[in-house]
Image (cartoon, rainbow, N blue to C red; front, side):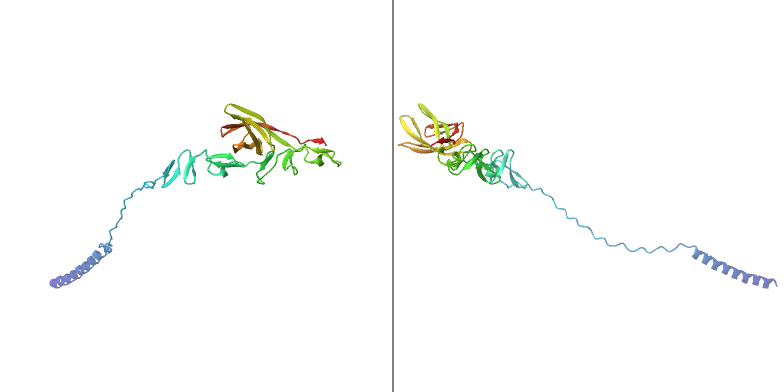
Length: 263
């Protein structure tokens, strides 16, 4: 009986131990470390190639040859300082380059604005109309072909408003106080525009004509003798012009005539 009890107890112990073993295995499996995640293999990295270019600064004016009074800036020639561009050259800034830079009736001559186109005496230039016209206080006289004072007579009709020919109109004229100075002396007199004016000096006789009388009393002259004949242009009021050994001085002038007289 004792042996049987031992045998039965032994069998039961084996079953209990088996159950414990199974539980231990289950516990170990349940409490074990979780499987580590799969790590993908590292990607293949291509090496980066960097192109390093050396920067070289090139002077744009290195091979540029500028002219007189010019300097190079960014490869282009410019006029320096007190100079300005005039065609292919640089000129002083206070000089004119083209006639467009000058005033009315002026032309650019050798860098200076010079009056070259004059209106006739007692005329002014109308910039808008681009023509000469009678100045204020004057009117154009067709018979005399010039501008005269509005108070002066133009023709015989002005002197005989009721008709007839009892009175006539004296022509409006202009004369200038003109001096001709030469070596050893001078001759001054009032020379009349449109008339023959006689001068004598140095033992010679001269005929002087005022070829044209322009705006402001500027006179073009013609001097004639048996030996010579020449012109003197643009003798301005209170100025002198020297030619052929003679100094011509225009001392200004006056208007006369333009009145009615009995016939």
